[in-house]
Length: 74
Image 1 (cartoon, rainbow, N blue to C red):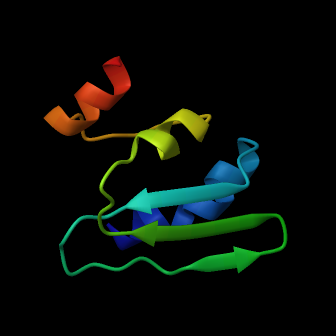
Image 2 (cartoon, helix red, strand yellow; image 1 turned 90 degrees about the vertical axis):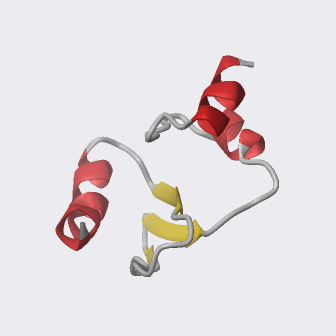
């Protein structure tokens, strides 16, 4: 998992994205917080609602759990 997340800034930067926000749940893994010129990556564990994050996003990558399905379909 860490290899995938560590390559994310370069990959998403090449695709034109400047910010990544991760919702990581309650596992033990915590990704590196990145604040570089032109790129940032941060995370949170849970929010009452991720609907606002999804509406602001230009790209959403999801594991397709039921909560995500409800937000994406509304």
